[in-house]
Amino acid sequence: MNVGILTGGGDCPGLNAVIRAVVRRATENGHTIIGFRDGWKGLMEDQTQMLDVEACRGILIRGGTILGTTRYQPYAFEDGVEACRRTYEQHNLSALIAVGGDGTLAVANRMVKEGFAIVGVPKTIDNDIKGTERTFGFDTAVQTATEAIDRLHSTAESHDRVMVVEVMGRHVGHIAAWAGIAGGASAILVPEEPFDIREICRIITRKHFEGRFATIVVVAEGASPIPGTMDVPEPEYNEFGQIKHGGVAYDVAKELERGTGFETRVTVLGHIQRGGTPTATDRVLSTRFGVAAMDAVIDQDFGAMVALQSDRIVRKRLSDCVGELKVVENDLLRVARVFTS
Ligand code: F6P
Image (cartoon, rainbow, N blue to C red):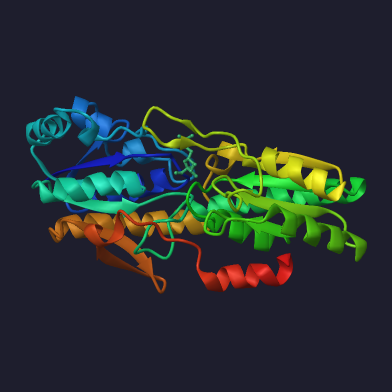
């Protein structure tokens, strides 16, 4: 059979490992994999890339996606879904594997209801997809952020400064919580809990007078203050109507410097967290997801999303996993609080 594959949304380390695993599993069963370029855009516009074992050689360790990706959604176009259907039929596809975050998988779920045979693979450095305990890309992002925090520690200590480190996480703070705990942060600000800047100033001042130097504050890009406690600029939006994050660390740093009197510096890690080679953990998870996705196609289990649960790969229904994000668990926030209060 002919099976399509696309990668949508923001890229993340491990996408190529998924593509490679899908191709290998398909090939051993005599199936053909057709890659669609740039997410749903490739399906709408019939932009393809043939994928065979040779084309996938050497990509396991490469970050990004050899298929390219965009945030295009067929439902945003009048003829979008019909255009996808035309391409789907023209290539005589028996199934499509959609690898993406909440946006891509929500589209996949709608299209399943319209008769497309789709299996979903959850990806995002944000680790915010419901139904799976982990998404690939997250481990690499946490590793990168933790290494950055470790480096900032020594320069912060030399100058007795406060370092504010901004990490990705628009709606959830998994990266901030994990990297903050791993890096020994004095404060971790996540979107799940609006922060009180005055309280953070008090904590930093107290820690400082107890002899603690090298204060690291980790802030997720989507974290926000308790309303009325701090000035924040009006948000900007991207072409898809999503808030363009990046920069809250500067607002936090200004307030911290004003409130504590300590010199404060900002590091915004941005897309560095999304680039580069995946960690071994992410390569293995991506590979397991890729094989499992092709297994689901062979079983004709359409509408399924592969997921990690208790270290086993399972299948969930896409409809149960989209539309609501997985937030940081209270247990982890409680652990973080032991070191940040
Ligand atoms: O969805 C993953 C993510 O990396 C978010 O953490 C971040 O807010 C967003 O993508 C950035 O998107 P873009 O690359 O389009 O600026």
